Structure formats: structure tokens, C-alpha cells
Image (cartoon, rainbow, N blue to C red; front, side, top):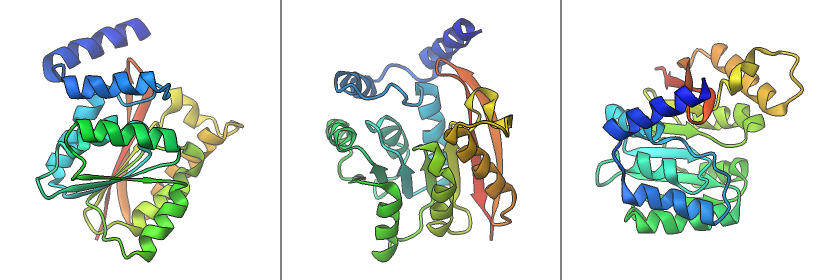
Length: 221
């Protein structure tokens, strides 16, 4: 099935997400810097961009930058006065991301903050950072519950929260898993299910990156 999924992804991308030299160069730069090849796919990036546009978002928070591939997709969906604040733990990844962002001509709309995301989020709160319209959580999965807590603190009614990699090849149904990533995602689900502030669902995805999925939620009044 993996081969079929890859062929279908190529078909969709060729028709609906034509080659873009800027984004292609981002992936090339990431590979040259030996960054993990765990970026969203092009059709997933386009989905994030469309969600930004559907929401009419002006302020985006991204937890987990890597080389800024998804960051650039989302930033392109913003109006001219829109902004992305993106958080990255690894200094090398952050530096690669900054170069990619500059090459994409989006340095005026994207702010990369480097360091432990939980510490950065606490600092942002002390700074009086305004709420965000859309928050994309795509970092280390054991900390997903804490990221969700912070996402809710930086939300207003109507804020869209998206979590990536929430299916984990179906392992999320294994309550006995000893993998901290699985347990982090499971707790993430439990917290969403038990919190009346957020209405959410999850969708399973297959493609060139295998079997996984997204959680998409909206913060209630």
C-alpha cells in the first residue's frame, strides 16, 4: 500500500500543488544540513495554507519549526500584515529555517524563536503576547499535553488548533504502549475530549509519509 499512497500523493501534488522552486529549495537546504526528513508533504502544506486562509488568520503560532517548510506554507496564506511566531529547540534547525525564510522573502512576517518551547511560551506570556488565530503543534510528542495547555492560554474564541502526527500508524489505540510519544498523544486526546473549551476531531491520513493524521479543533466561546 505504501507504493500506492506515494503514487497518489504525487498525482495530487502534480495537479494541485505545482512545483515551487522556493519550497523545493527549502527541502534541498534541509537535506544538505542533515535535518530530519519529517516535514509535512506538499499537499499537507497546502492544506495548512488553506486552513489559514479559511480562518482569515492574521496571527499564527507554530510549535516546532524544523527548517520552516510548513512555516512558509502557512505564512503564504496570511495577509500582508499577518505574522507567524515559530518555536524551534535546535539552534542548527533554527538557523537553517531563518535562511530559508529569508530566501522565501518572508522574514518580515515570520519570527523564529530558539530554545525549549515550554520556556519560550512562558516567556511569551510574561511579554504579554496577544492571542493567536491559528496554532500548529508539531514538536516532540511527549510534551503535546503541555503544548495544548499553552495553546489554550494563547487562544481566543474561534482560535483554530491543529496537531500533527496524532495517529502514529494506529498505535494511539494501544493503551499499554511504552513509547512516550504514543502516551503523549493519548493524553493529548484525553485532554481535548475532557475540555469543553475546545471542539475537535481527528482525521487519519495516508501518503508518502506513511499512516498518520491531524487533529483539528476550534476554541469555543
